[in-house]
Length: 135
Image (cartoon, rainbow, N blue to C red):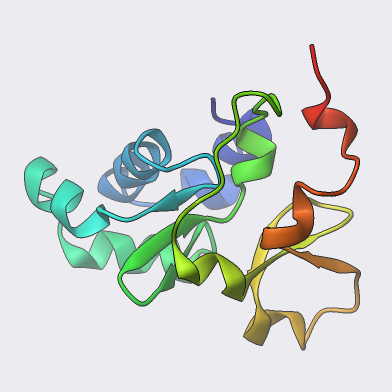
């Protein structure tokens, strides 16, 4: 799923078409926490140049950590039931935190400049979050 709050925003509309396409491709190929381990391969398959990934990073729609790409608005785009959820196996997930109010992912470096409450991604599912309750 993709949140209309994200994809109908002016910031998203301003992106080049290939950047938008890459956002959807990465979103569809991410694990249950929004982490895509194969972004470079996906870009090659679909003929998308690196500059379009850089556009997504600069516009703050994805986060790149080492060779993985993380969909910043994953929790707005997706709600996965607890009984179907599988935590990511990527060690980079330890470098990501969730802002309590917006449910947007941030890196530890970005958090220093934001005055809000954050939960490490590795602990986020352990809390009682109503959007993940049993259906």
